[in-house]
Structures are given as structure tokens and as C-alpha cells.
Length: 219
Image (tube, rainbow, N blue to C red; front, side):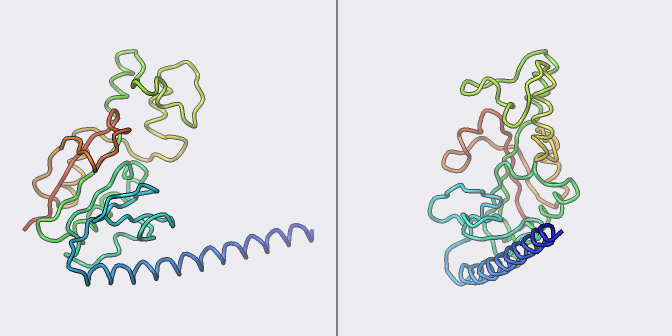
């Protein structure tokens, strides 16, 4: 019994430390946002950036300490209205609960300056589905079993659909070249269109499986 109580107390202690660290990092983020907005440089924001390093002029944001700004996207964008010139997101939206995607997109729209843009990259589920329909594996040159990470191989083509749809519980949504632009329009974006892969912005190692779109805030 004493061991159980001690383990419970240790868990509560570590939770309290974690919450304290999160509060400190969020305060630092708000301070950094204020500083950014007092400089003459436009804000180019990469949301859900993970550990990707961006070139000068870009600000990375995610719920980890590797980014310039620590923030949980469940709380929206920590910038005031009409303050961000460009927002970019790569392979993030498929991880969001369906009920959270449009609210986040609308908050991106709110934070953008008039004429500002949101540029998005997500996995193209149609590639996997087409491969399944035509009874073949979806492959790329570097990884002939590109869905296998975190999954068992059963020998069925449905394995690749399970990968793109669920990815061990990490994926929540699938996208194609129709619903990705439609989501941007639902959030209020204008001049929405699919776009081509961009060097120095998009990850070349994800090009084989990705779809790209861009939308703008009305002037």
C-alpha cells in the first residue's frame, strides 16, 4: 500500500512540475510574441513545426522546447488580429481531431494580415486509396513499405490504408485534392487553390506522398 501511495505522490509531483514548466514556457511565448510585433520585420509563422529548423525570417511554433515559440495549437494562435504575414503548416492537420480543424483554420485567418496567406501540406490519401483499388502497393523509391512504421505487416493491401488513416492512433483525418481546399474555404479563406511543391519551404522527403494548398485572407 505504501508503495502505491508513494508512486501516486511521485506522479502528482511530476504532473505539477510539468504544468509549472508549461505555464513558464507559455509566458515566455507571449513575451516573445510581443517582442516580434515590435520589430519592423513581417511575421512568417510555421505552426506545428516539430523539430524542423527554418531559415532566417521564419518563426516556429509547437508544443515542444525545440521551437521558437512554445504553444499548443488546441489553444489557437498566440498572435493578435491582423499581425501575421504568412502561416505555414506541414503534415500537421491530419493529426487534429475533426472538430478542431476548422476552428484552428479560422484562428489562423483571424491572426493573418489582410492579404496574408496560409500554406498547407498534408498526406494525399488518394494515392494510398488508388493503390489499394488497383491492387498494388503504394511505394516510393526510398521506402518500398512506406506505411510500415509502427504497424504490423499482415500481407494485405489494407495495411497501407490503416497506416494513412490511423498511423497508430496519431492520424485523425484523411485529405485529398478536393477536401483540403474545401476546408480552407469553410474557414473563410479566399483565392484558395492547390499549389506546387516549393523548394526551401516544403520537405523534399515528403514530396512523394503530399498534397499542397494555399488560401488568402481578404484584403
